[in-house]
Length: 388
Image (cartoon, rainbow, N blue to C red; front, side, top):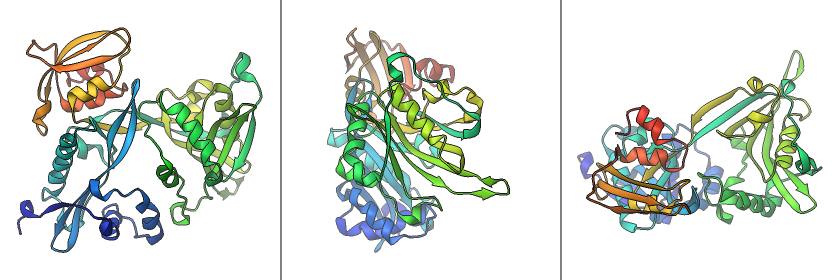
């Protein structure tokens, strides 16, 4: 059967076992029954597209229903995930058909003006109009060589650290997360289902490290910060050489931030601390007495695809008044193509409507995705030749 004729259908709950096996295979992982069961809690079959060849599932592209923080607002966003093709069916156009179908389905539903994903390889998704919307900073800290400054003034009031099992303090974790999420573009909503998924900690996924641990920072008014962390134990001829691995750190004020980092940089029998998900404006860079020893490195973060130009540009807020006409090219969703007038006033609220007026700027749809969360400027994109 020609690959163009291989059917694409919506999944059912009964498809999870086979779909999960495809996912493990496509990402070169050994199948793990326990992990598959744990991850089934976030499966949305009605939002999962499957390509089949006879009785076999040979392709998959799914989406989660979550909100995403954008500048000044929370917007529904299709959280694209589990994109995979069987090794026996690669290079046959299956991925393209599924990704285009998914985008058109999201557009037709009319609820989510943007789609977002973390990419296994960035080159894959640029072909479908995704733009690199956030940059993350990883840190490999030589903990013996870094000292942190104290916050000035009232921020130096003492707090208290408390260790806990993450699942036992999920209410406190969620409270801090929700307090901070509205001001952090690129953060996704987490309901109970997603907190359970976030705290999955199976022995098979630890790669020899300890179980996931939580440390809470408390003031008299309550918990104002936390970190999720584990330790990769190691010894060499010189003695202990363990590494603290930080998976998440949130703090509502400078005092909590400094106290949490000081703890993570001074765990007994460890000599280094690793954090993969820092922000480009991570305060740690400005607290360290020797920032070189943080060994920061840039990497791509979230990729965004604008699905509905008018809805996306009207849905976020703006830092300054603007009145501009943008001519957009979109090969896959022609409804987005053409000229759009974006007007925002001093309050930050904006509207985006179709227009016949002459264009001030011209760009591909991927450029709007790259600029959408505020990480990339149109000036930088113009310097790269991406904006006319």
